[in-house]
Every structure is written in C-alpha cells, then in structure tokens.
Amino acid sequence: MAGTASLQFEPCRVALARFLATASEAESVEIAALARLRGGALQENWGLDARFSGGSLDGEQRLVLRTSAATGIAASLTRRQEFAVQQAVFAAGVTVPEPLFASEDPAILGKPFFVMRRALGIAASDRITGDRALDPAFPAIADRLGRELALIHTIRPPQSGLAFLAPYEKVGPAQQIRRFRAYLDRHPTPRPVLEWGMRWLETHMLPPAAPVLCHHDFRTGNYMLDGAALTAILDWEFAGWGDPHEDIGWFCCKSWRFARLDREAGGIADRTPFYRGYESASGASIDPQRVLFWEVLASVRWAVIALEQCDRHMIGGERNLDLALTGRRASECELEILMLLDPDGISVHA
Amino acid sequence: MRDLPSGAALLPLARDMLINELMPLLPEERRPDALLVAKFMVVAQREAEAPAEMERAILREIELLCGPGSEAMRRFAGDLRIGAFEDGEARERTARAILWRLTVPRLRQSNPEFLAANGFDQKGGVVGRAKQCPSPVSG
Image 1 (cartoon, chains in turn brown, cyan):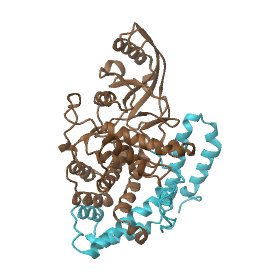
Image 2 (tube, rainbow over the protein chains, first blue to last red):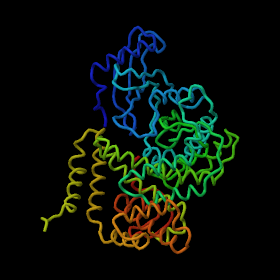
Image 3 (tube, chains in turn yellow, orange):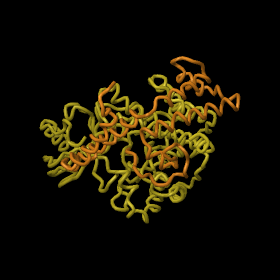
C-alpha cells in the first residue's frame, strides 16, 4: 500500500533522474518527490515531482511513473504496449495524460515503466458516485464520457503502432468465453452461475462487429474529475480491438455503479445522456440487445478477474488482504447475471 | 467443546477495538486499510455463524439432479456448460432455482449490503429494485 516499495531506494532515484534527463535532453533532473499513489490493483502508480534543467520539459513538472505490481493477470498489456496505446489515443485527441517516456531497461528500476504527465482531480469511484454536490453536473459528465468513448472508437485496425494488439478474431466474445472456461476448469471451486451465464452468451452469440480500439476497462474509477471537469481517462492496460458495444456494456454494468446502483451509466447518471453523447459523437446507434449481451459478458469477465485477483494471493505469493477479499466479489457478478437473465426468478427464488 | 466466547463472538469485539480505539491513532492514509481489515472481520464472523445445514441441503438438491458424490457440484457446472437441462422445462427450472439458492446465501455472508441495495431483504425476500447502495463495495 502507500509508500512502501523499492522505488524509494536511492539507487533507483539516481538512475531514474539520469534516465529522465537523457530522455528529455535536459542538462540535469532533480527528483523532489516520489510517492506511491493509491489505487491500481495491477499496476503501481507513483507521483513524481521533478525539476528539469533545460530540455523538452524545462522547469518543475508533476508527473506519474507507472510500473507493474509484483504479480499480474494474464490479460494485461506490458507497460511498453500500454504506453503505445496511450500515445495513439492522445494523438486522437482523447482526454488522457500525455505519455512522455518509456523504458524496459532493468538497470533503472528493475522493471519496465513509463512516465506521463499528472492530471488533476480524483478517480476514487466511491467518492465520485457518492458526491451529492456533483449531482447537477453528472448528466453532462456522462454525456462527455460518451463522447470520449466515441473518440477512442475512431481508432480502427490496422494501426502500425499497435501491431502488438491481438486481432479481433482472437479476442472476440467466443474466444473470451473459451478463455474463461479454461480458467474455471483449472480453478478449484466450480462456479455454476458463471457456466450458466456463459451458456446463455454462447446461445445468443452476436454477429461480429467491425472492430475498434476498446479501452476494455472504461468505467467509473478509471477517469479523473477535477470538480465537474473531466481531466483524464486512465488505465489502458486492457486496451485492444473489440466490439464498440463492449465498452458501453462494461461502463453500464452493475459492478461499476458503486454507491449508486440505480444510476445505470457508471453510477453517475441514467443511460440517456451517456448514450446520447456517444451516439451524437460517433454517428452510430447503440443497440440495447448488444449492450445486454456485453453486460452479461462483463459480469462473467469481472467475476473471473476477481477470482484471478484472489489467485494472486492464494497461489501467486502476493500476500494481500485486498486481493484475497476481491475473490468474494465474484458472487456479486453472479447475482447480477441471474437478475439480468432470470428477472422473473428474483421474487420466486430469492 | 470449545472455550467461550467463540471465535465468531470475539470478532465483533476485536472489530470495535480496531475501529473505535486503534483507527483514530492511525495516519489518515492507512485508515482505508484498517477499514478493509474491519470489513474482513465482519465477513469472517458471518461465515463462521452460517448454518452448515443450508449448504448441505443445496448439495443434496444438486446430487438429485446430477448424481451423488463429492464431485456433484463440478458435474452440475459441467452440465450447465453443455445445456444438459435445456431439454426439459422442469429440470431447467430446478437447475435455475439451485443457482439462486447458491448465490443469495453466499452474498448474505460476504456482502448483505449489496443484496439489500438490489432489493433483497435480510431473509432473502425481495423488497424492491435497486436504489442507493448504503455500504459501497470496494473496487
């Protein structure tokens, strides 16, 4: 948790300052502060305040250094790949911190990292969804997020800078289901509800969509607000080619509504302003049936991720209470799958 | 015969001490971690107090559907994967009922606030659809 990892060791700071100076063509760089930021279960984010003498970043700079946690899950991009995705969306005009430098040289920090500008504001999902002062602004924020998502989806394959992303044919819904089943086959505890949900997905499979760049974790908690102003969309580690409705279903699925389950667009608004922002910016219509499909898949996917997070504690050697408790969230996803696919069963079976 | 108070009964005492006496002494940035520990203690207490009979009853229902044995739950999951209950309405309805009965009691232990926010009362009945979540889940 906060401020305990090896980046505080002096050799790292010296090597990092030297790297930043070389990358920015500065005469020298002095690191004034380096402190772990909260959040980021899979990646570590460090607030980095530095003074650059000369070069492209001359002056005082507030930056973020992003590197990997001790253990991860299979679906994450590498930091170098995430940096490339962030460069692509920044170039497309998406509200994202400007990515500056990346390195895979183990001599600097012992693991790959990249550096970006630091956005102002908060991302904490409970604080955002529970902030009544933001109530009047939430519809406009939801509209803006819909527009941002449409902008992300303007990036389509092929992209030479994103050649490492798996082709859509290998990461579409049928392939995701195959991966989830393979995972559950290895898991010690059977999950009948997830199997039932995946069976429904399999028997209601969508015709393929023209793939776009999907964030794949576009949700409350992964954007920053400074007051009511959107300042950044964060955490691009799961980005890849996908169906545009995939991000819409993920944003709206119940797991990401936090303090406000009744506000179906990310816990901040109803779906109307979010859909309106997306449709007016993209010129495309949102199909509610496709969204439902992807919301069911989102609940299956988040359940599997929650179990994988728990595995990092149980079998990955990363002793961590937060990770251990995350595994129990799979049951929340299972309830949502039942409520979505068997709405009549709520009163009969509960 | 175990000593009293039981481990489950000691947990709320420990939790009270953590929240009321120790947490105020912690620096601000470590208080979320203390709340996480407190949350775990509630889950542990509920799991320790949960009646094992209910779990056994669900397992018996699964065995009736999928055959007896220690692997009944895994067989049930495998049958659901291949749609084995879709050929008969009664079997399909039974399988679905089991899914609900597996899920709701588990959440009653790990996150009853989530159940309540979804309109379920403490006994598992439905009181209305989702409104605000009184105790936000972490994430």
